[in-house]
Image (cartoon, rainbow, N blue to C red; front, side, top):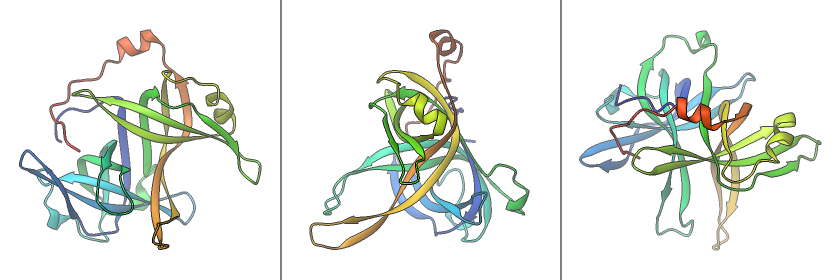
Length: 227
């Protein structure tokens, strides 16, 4: 385990390692690696979720493609600036604090779960799908130490969509759900079409936080400022 648990951002995902761990970045001499984890859904499909891990937590060689692991950590965001035509973008990744190797992923009851306590930082957008399903897009700012925040896109459905469509910027809410991935295509100025992956939290439960709840649930101090 690295540092203390941040109680307003908790993730547990389980699945098979889908890609080799590649160098991501370095902070104060500590190297970090990223890889993709195939996390099964209730159907036969899966979500391919990005995971970032410190070299001090586990060696790169242990993260072999095809191995089944459980990752505990936080869902974090950061801006990736590069010189390509794609420009800057928000990167979302599960920052691993603990990794356990599993014998059989089928024994895991809930392979994809997340809890967030954050603040609405953009007016929620309510919409309906061509099939009439109600959806509200939410952008949640989740605080972490050293005056940083993670900006997490969330999607609520049905009754939760109608409820969250009336929320205002600055409202403090808790959400429970799962991380989901989806592919989309982006056309560059050159005419080239890129297939990219977006991540968001599919909300299964939400509630408004009161000031009393916030005071009684102050997050513990975290000793790192990585990612």
